Image (cartoon, rainbow, N blue to C red; front, side, top):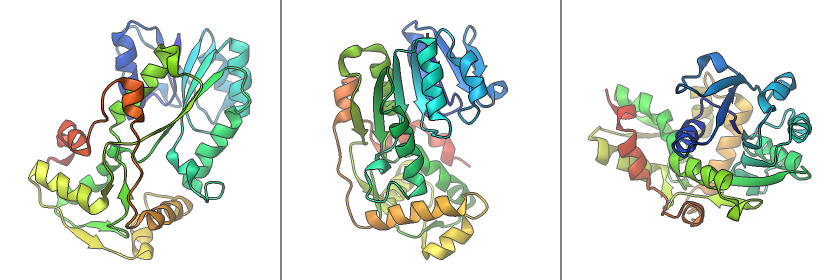
Amino acid sequence: MILITGGRGAVATNLLSLLLADGHAVRVGSGRPDQLELPDGVSAVACDLRDPTTFPAALAGITSVFLYAEPAHIAEFVTTATEAGVEHIVLLSSSSVLDPDAATNPVAKSHLDAELGLADAPMTVSVLRPGAFAGNARGWSFSIMAGRPVSLPYPNAYADPIHELDIAEAVHALLTEPEHRGEVYRLTGPHTLTFTAQLDLIAELTGRSVTIDHVTPDAWRQEMAEYIPAHYADGLLDYWRRCDGVPTVITDTVATLTGHPARTFGDWIRDNAAVFAA
């Protein structure tokens, strides 16, 4: 049986559909299992990665795990998984661990600590390091729908937006096919795009008016204070500053793992057009 952690996330939701289509037995874990909406026959279980008391019941009878990068109790998770007989863990990490300040940047550090916590695990561990989720564009939808400019401190910062379904398919391949297990993979979308180019594409494909307000980092930090913790906002700003005017290196890892090219950012917009609907 396969355990999916972080069951309310976009990657987890897509992964569940893929595994069920193949007939795999799946258990879905979440810190709030009561909020999960699951198909008939799929069991929900409390699996709060910040609460190790939930680990034994979640891992009982499990052979493979899809794990989100929460490092708070990673040692206890590995111990409990080992005792439960888990044979394989696929960790959803981040390409931010490759940044020079990964050990101090809060955006990267949690992923890096999770990877380090699994480094000596006795089971097979596969690590996926995606870049920017295409779904991050949801954060712009509120301004776009309200007809307000999107505030950007670094409008010319590049990203490598990857469709969450591509990530889910990469996880699915690692969980179900032994060929590529036990390695570390960096995932990107097929193109490197500035934030400005991404917003231009949203406007083109949705027919909505999209404008940009080029704000200072301090102004953006204040605007986001209600939604993003200050230390996390600082980590994002540091990352965007390094990416300003610097195209991201693109990989073909999605094709290696899934057998098809990575979906474009335009594909994501078309698949999620309702996000930008009035």
